[in-house]
Amino acid sequence: MTRFAVVLLAASVLGLVSRATATVERPTPGAETTRKVYISAVDSSRAPVTDLKAPDITVKENGKERPVASLEPASAPMHVAIIVDDAGTGAFQSGVAQFLQKTLGRGQFSITLLNPQAARIVDFTDDVAALKTALGRLGQRGRIQADGDQMPDAIVQAAKALQQRKAERPVILSLTLAGGQPQSVEPNDVLATLRSSGAM
Image: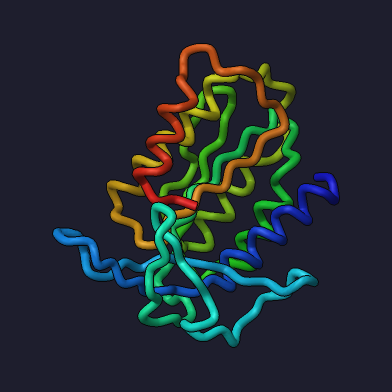
């Protein structure tokens, strides 16, 4: 795995672990009176800021400022859907292992491997043995031809799985070397599904 990819994974771990929960008041008639949103704050050197208070932040919804009723460290478990598209190279095995080491105990994880079809190799779990077995399957498997439709479709499936679980802190971590233009998957549909799932 390249150093750049490891740094990106490390940065994403930092952001996930240092999240805070802000409860925002919503005075809109007929709507919930409060809504929980997750934020992360870092200083100029990208270190987590952990001493924020509710008056220190501003939340806007549809361009309108909403009062922040409370701010506290995020404690709800994450549900992280990891999607790996490495074209058979095994390039992300080490990075995913590091990610799991940093975040185990903070939620449940699923791993989907594009080979080239998307196949979930472990469903949401915090079981170390099951996750180790899945990591073993992320090694080199020989070169695989990329299919541009597989990643968007895998993201949609992950978003739907998170919605079905009613995950409070849904996260989708998508890793790819290949890319490629989707032919039959409409990108706007993928974005709409992501929005409705609330996943990071």
